[in-house]
Length: 615
Image (cartoon, rainbow, N blue to C red; front, side, top):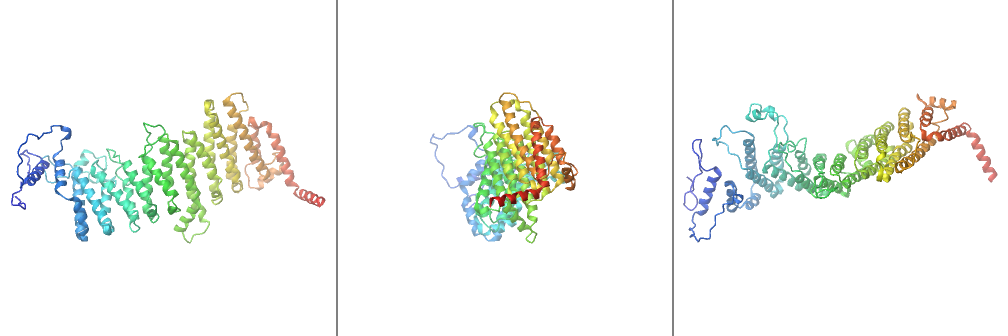
């Protein structure tokens, strides 16, 4: 027996054996507290006003009643506050004791007990484990002047050990009882309140550390254990649903733009990974309002965080380019939720990222290779530009919403005719024309022509989308024509692909009356006009001539040709029924251009004579 301060003996804890049945440990501890709290108090008489509640819904477990009595007997806030007066060894011992209690409890939960009556290692209750996690976080935040030492020596290892995914754990413990019952599953995180408070502790410490320049990157890099592939939360068999929890913590971290401007690549890796995870886990359709999202949807919180970071002056040229993956996830979330506003907003973020890409590429190149040559900036720019174009082209091709496709097609055309194309290698530009520009436009034109009988009330929408597809084919081609011509083999392939798409669009010459046929007629007029302009430009440059002109064939051979562009062009145009009446006119223009190229001196003499007569 133990003696308490007023001379009365305390009731000993009740110990249960295999052959003895009695109250549980929680009930025994409750009786202990009840006896100690009643010592020295006079018994109150029975007044008849007492009431005994028999409702099972309001009855608490013995451990819950114990926690309630402990909260009345113990000043936990004072315990946290007085930890500031402990020396470093005392503070470390206090935190290590809490960590050891949580670790032992987790081990006893993961391992099966040898027998039901064996009480050698009693685990903490779920609520007590959660409370221990709260104490860890609160004590660390109360001792801010010693936070760096506490984090590096205690907390970092604790959070990583609790939340990290371990795929090989089941094989290493093949002899244990757990492996015998479930050998095919690796170690996972059980659904307990302690895990939720552990995640909350990581987020709270990251929010605090984001405003501190010294330890911000090290703490923020711990966010990687909250999402795959390092985090074990995703692999829980009970599917821990902490997505909204993580999204709210992410927003509170990202809104501190002043602190984020000082973190390094490790800190950004943790933030961007959590951004991508929250964006991919959101986008659930709202049952109340179709086409909208809930205020606490993870993808919407991720969009708010990205929007703030990309528009903050403090973070200009600081946000890594890996953010493009998070933006793609936001656009996909808008598709899942049937919310075109979110998809269009995500495309606008890609446009913002594209506008500052050149300075970002130069900045990153200078940071990684300060003595590198200037022409290496083009390779860095290509490394950033191509994923952005692919991110814009994906919704342009696959989105189910017409407004999203139109917005993506317009942004993709503007991005391809931007100044970035002049800074990348010519071969890479040819690959982009083939894999992004012509691929997206050709797929969309084929899909629209396949369902043209169902245009109906979407007459204007389909016409706009076809016009955007045609512009996507010809505008970047003419804008970068001089660069494309320098790579002759790729240029011929691009031009043949363009002729194939236009043959598909303009192949049928029969046009009747009706709304659907009006769409086809207007589209063919627009397509033939763009094709004519492209042919005229190539004729003016001497790349296409009348195929009966021997000089044109000699010029193609002298240019390293292999395949005669002129013969391929006239053969393709002649096979298009809609363009057959225009072939002779275009050939005549080619012959006139060839004559002008043969006698350039005569033209100069005529111009000089005209100038003398004017004088």
